[in-house]
Amino acid sequence: MTASGGVRIVGLFLAGLLAVGTAAACAGGEGGGSSGVSSGTSTSGGGSNGGQASATGGSGESTPTWRPTDGGGSGSGGTESGGSNSSGGANGNGASGSSGDVGGLNAGGDNGGGNNEGGDNGGGANEGGQNGGGGGHIEGPGWLPPGPHSPNTENAPDPESVYDVLRTPARCQEALDTISRQELDTEWQVLRGLANACLAVEGRGGSWAQAVQDYSAVANRVNTCKSRAAHRVLAGLLDFHRLYPSATVELADSPGGTRACEYVISSVDVGGDGEATPGDTIWIEVRGTYFDHSELLRDGSVYIGGVRLEGPPNPLSESGDQLVLTAVVPALDGKYGQAVDVRVHYNTTDAIKESAFTAVAPGTPGTTGSTSASP
Image (cartoon, rainbow, N blue to C red):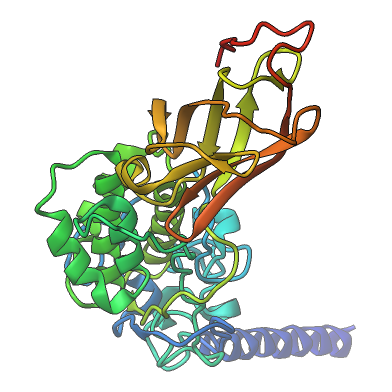
């Protein structure tokens, strides 16, 4: 009995020593290696504090704590999951982040959070990628799609032509200087915000605070194809800055691809029967104008059934990138009883509505000779 009790006491003592040694070994292993932000174009910046960097840009201005409502359609950095607040949580895996589906930092893998974020193993903590454990590259934000290019035959600044200037990021300061001399409306204001964000994200000045203010001010008010595209791209830049507040990136000149505007005749109204005779007034609605309307109304032309009408287009109403014109059907000898096209020409571009209506000869039974359809 005495020997057996002594064995039990020694066994318990040895188990206690083993538990203490294991705890000490585990404590010494904290702050191990981690994985960084993966893929994308390289950026610079981020500072030594990595993911603990405050939600401020390089200029010390506050960055938005909200998510742009249109989702930053041009694309912002990152891939998926995780949040922008990479300093939160014991494991630094974005547990306290707020960006959700915008592409999080996944800051530092299992041990990226806490005290080790700014150190040698703080993968993802340095947004510029110089110390990121996984290669440290961040996907840069998208830039402006083609407009198309506005002819700008008036040779005077207008939002459509300044949009074209902004498509070359190196000219963002030039664009901002032009914008600052204008009386701001919605189109000018969204471009001002975009020009400021362009300069700020490249580390060339600008103002994130002004970009945020202009983005919010024009929300739900942009009504032209170019201003809508500018607003989407601005949302992407603000998302990028919120995710990587200390990072800068060199924006690439926009390639080709899907255009911001599609210049088309959306409708031709000749009345309910779809027929019109010479002398009738018809209504032509064009959309996706990527140039100043005054240029079209001065230098454009309207063709009905291949016949060019005299004088410039006659406007009835306009709203955003929509313009409604009125036109009088000319004599169309040889084309009566046929469906005819309507074309609105400006510079080198044509908006065409094929088989827009059926031309009817004057005096045809059942016609009035001169009608006016309602737009």
